[in-house]
Every structure is written in C-alpha cells, then in structure tokens.
Image 1 (cartoon, rainbow, N blue to C red):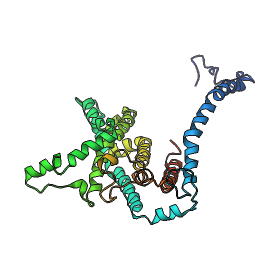
Image 2: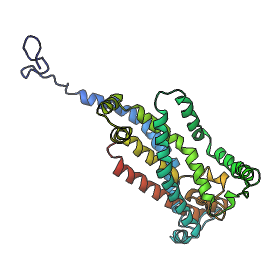
Image 3: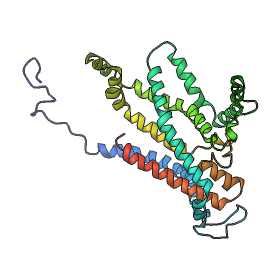
Image 4: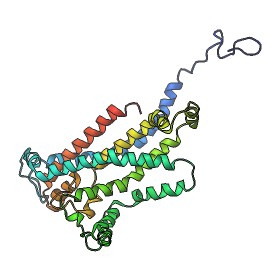
Length: 315
C-alpha cells in the first residue's frame, strides 16, 4: 500500500532502518517480575502445603491403618481398607449415583440451561427479571435448599402430599422409597444448579458478534441453522467449561444431600462424599474414610486433568 505521493510508507519501506529493542530491555522486564514472585510466592506455597499437600499425604497414610481417630494409628492393615471398600455394596451404589448425577447434569441440566439462556439473553422486556428468578436457586445455600425440598417432599405436611390429596391420589413418601429417592435428589440438583450454567451461557452468548447473525439472516438461514452453525461453534469454549464444572461438581455433591436424605433410605442416595462422611466421620472409621478420600481424590484429579488435556487444551 502506498501513500498519495507514491512512496512506500515508512513502516513498509525495506530500506528504512529497523528499530531494535535495547539489549537489556528483556532482562529489565524479568527483573521487575522476580521481586513480586519472591514476595508473594512463598506465602502461597506455604499455605498450599499446610492446607492441601499435607492433609492429602496424611489421608493417604491413614488409609493404610485400621484407625478410629483416637491416639496414634498403630494397626497397620496395608491395602485392606481399599479391598473392603471395593466389596462394599453401599460404595458401589454411591459411585453409581455419582455417575447418574453426571449423566442427568449433562443430558438434562445443561441443555435446559442453554435453552433458557438463548431465551433470556436477548433484550426483551422482563429478561433481567427472568434471569434473576432462574439464578436465585443457585444463590441459595445448599443446606437451605436441601431443607426446603425435604419439607416439599414430606409425605405428611409437604407440598407433594397436599397436591396428591387434592387430586385424590395416595400420599407418596418419596424420600422414604428406595426406588424413587434418588430421582427426587436428581430433580433438586437440576433445579439448584441450572441457573449457574445458564449465566455462563448468557455471558458466552453476549460475547458473540451480532454481525454474524445479521450475515446469516442475509443468507436466509433458519433459526436452527443460526444456532447450529453460528451459536454452537462460537459457544463451544463456554460449553466445555460448563461441562467441566458440572462433572467435578457432581463428584463433590454433599451439602444438599445430607439435610435432604442423609444418604438414605438404606444408602440408596449416597454419593462418594456422603459415604466418606458417614463412615469416616460419624462412625469414626478414620482409616476406612481416608481410603474413600484417596479414591475420590484420584478420580477427581484424573477426570479434571484428563478433561482439560483432551477437551480444553486450546481454551
């Protein structure tokens, strides 16, 4: 490209001298970063070591003992806790429930959140109010949400019992039924957390350039084609992030289940974390509970790093 005089611009002229960075500029920038690292990195490493690394190491050590938590662990049993854990039917139920929660989150919760995000992300009357209403369950504390839904499901005084009596049906005791209690928990999980994913999707939708939709309209694209070929590709980083949060959060589900069902009836709604709490804390089987913690840690770390390595390496 030339200017009005026909001469090459100065930046594009191959004969113009090239400005080079001063020889020590790179090292001066590094010299400004090093004092900050020296000042802030050691306290962070110290706190991380005290509250993360050491507890994990202690849990791995205690998992090799048959220990109740009193005194010093002396009854060394090796890997027997892990062998007993693998044969425990309640733990297998807990793993199955965690997998079920992940599946429902991915196949029901996230599509619902994406659908609602596409509805309320536009500048329409009342969109802000709808966002607030859908996001409120996530703001509510997990323990409070569990208590609220426990009263709703109550077979004597709850909302479900009232509706059943009005319709002339027998009063269902959902949380006392081994076959249906886990589905009641799944309904609460979807209600509680879909607002968080909806807000993630709204943020991703608002970052998409509107001119792309205008170009799609000019090309005669249908709403489904706009969603399929414009929205989904550009929203894919947000979707991958939402899936990551959903999977890790499903594995760590605890606060809401304890006031809702306590893992019952007959361990039918246990998750790996509630199983750890029930056997490692309330029953004072610290060695056995530590083995559960080690298994849970390995599963979470493997899924987290594997997912980031495979699906989020370019994000």
